[in-house]
Amino acid sequence: MSDLLPVAPPLEVVLVAPQIPPNTGNVARTCAVTGCRLHLVGPLGFSLDGKELRRAGLDYWDDVEVVVHPDWPAFEARVVGGRPERLHLFTARDGQGLFERRFAPGDLLVFGQEQLGLPPALLAAWPDRRVAIPMLPGQRSLNLAVAAGVGVYAAIRSLSV
Image (cartoon, rainbow, N blue to C red; front, top):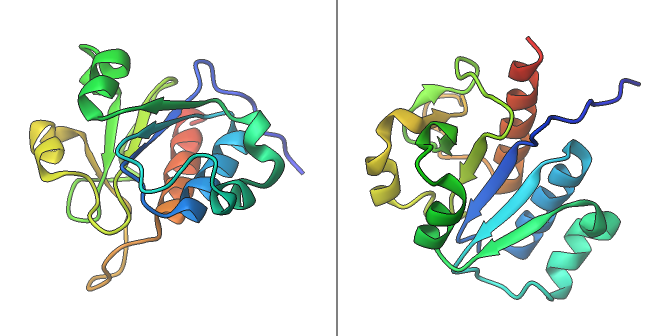
């Protein structure tokens, strides 16, 4: 078994308007085991005290730093600032292939709502920051928690090459 070395500063996973508690709980588990910080950008489709969210995250909640932001403008002002090069906007529509993208410590891996993905205005604001996870033609998308896991581990892998 090989251990994962912590990334300093840690990668940051951002969920924009997540709606399904078990997805967010599973993403929290991925963040806990990889040392990523988790940002939840509202509006959220569930309560942070909900049983489904807690159940999906199991006993990993104490091992993940969760930061909640009321909306994208608040997140952008507080976290992104003037450094959009830190953004990696994951989308099923188009973008640079995940395996061609290079990541740096402290980067922000941004994932959208389960049914709608990232807001079109956000994708339009930074078209060069879009990242696509390869899929077979004709397939719609991956589950949010799966996409976040694939993105996190690909980013960690790119840091080690």
